[in-house]
Image (tube, rainbow, N blue to C red; front, side, top):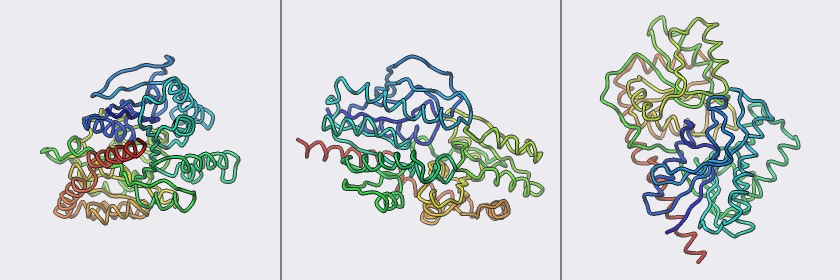
Length: 402
């Protein structure tokens, strides 16, 4: 039996898009007859929402997958500063590399999920020192996004060192996974890439995320990380502007760095009756909450370095049969167009309000968009299909190595 190790900074019970993506991938690979081990930190993200755990390691089995939890620094603040973030990002992959040290050859393939880019440390060590096959799965341009959002200074020594390490990873991996075609193009334009590049979309578990036969509520929903890349503040202002006519509830489901800031905005705008912060909810409850909503919100900031992104939440909205309203350019606009399930608004409260009104005033159109979205993700974005593609690549890589 083939043995695969997945190294990821996030894993359930964390509720980020990548936590669910890694979980679904691991479970599907396991069902295909591969022995899968996932190495992840003790639950931490969003910061400040989980208790700190000081145990060096813990092992459990979840749905047939061996899950190894390793200690790392766990920031206590909801919006941690640069140093605690870096400790969280750096200590875990170094710990993972040390954990792997005694017997790395028990795995046929190691898969590292980035960002953060430092998860590549154990992959690089396993490939360079022990010749283990390495799949480096990249979900976004972490360095570029960090510069755009003000976390890293362009031209700083930290940027130069980070890009140098990214180049090492891309030069030594046996396979590069990317979530969108645009992400693959941007990586190829900036770095030297010799390995094959495979499109492995974020996708969605269409068995879990599916339409529920439930009555619609007069609400719209955002379900995901409440973070710096989202223009949720503009959506709050837009909801306020249309609520004299529609009396909507806007559910913000999840947690993250900017939640407290958004709560202060909702208080200042006197809209706490209509803007509801649910906090994190169990993943199994989210499909029902989506199904009973009129539409989903995916408001990426209009930054060039986010144009490669197709958010997991958009796939989940479509899988549950509701249209989505997105902001931003690039892949999210392509997804809206190709699926016929979304509309894109400019990143202003006025444009978002206008797009909201257009969908709310035409329920037949919104319903048709929801049906198209469900079919699109079933045909193109099911995580079982992505896992099968990855399994085929693993089989090919390991056969060639023999």
